[in-house]
Amino acid sequence: MRRSEFIAGGAAAVALVALAFPRRVLAYAVHYTNAQWKARLGADRYYILRENGTEPAFSSPLIKENRPGLYRCYACDQALFSSATKYDSGDGWPSFWNVLPKATLTRADYEIPMEPRTEVHCIRCGSHLGHIFDDGPPPTHKRYCIDGLALRFVPK
Ligand SMILES: [Zn+2]
Image (cartoon, rainbow, N blue to C red; front, side, top):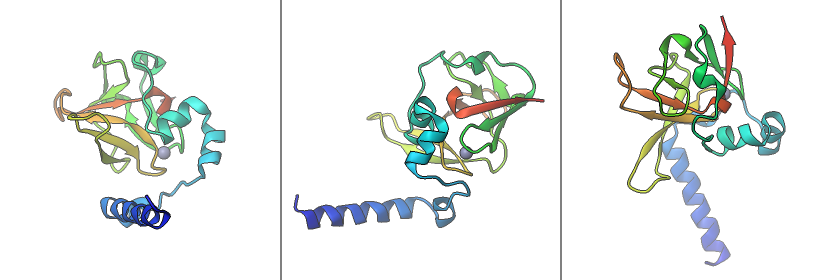
């Protein structure tokens, strides 16, 4: 590929991203450079929150956390989930059947071929939190499958 073609491809990709995300979403209230995020979060949390990584199943101590309280975004402290909607899904990650109002955004994830998933991101800083599935309990029947490293639990 010639350099000019590469640049044109890059511009097209940027245009596609701009189409996929409304303008208000592109300007997150909390914003840092990648180097700043890495310094703030450390390698493991940076991988989850900023590089869409997934922690190993059953690795998070928050799976067993049953006290009342709030689960906040580790990157920016946005309140994301209430302990009132947490449940034990047995899937190996902290799970919730609902999210707090206006706390997250979703995005299609096609990383696994033939298995499209829905990613969950923090509305305030854009950090990746995990995925949503449709096999949760009532009343929502949603399963927010969230990386424990993306969360900070604050007991009531
Ligand atoms: Zn955040």
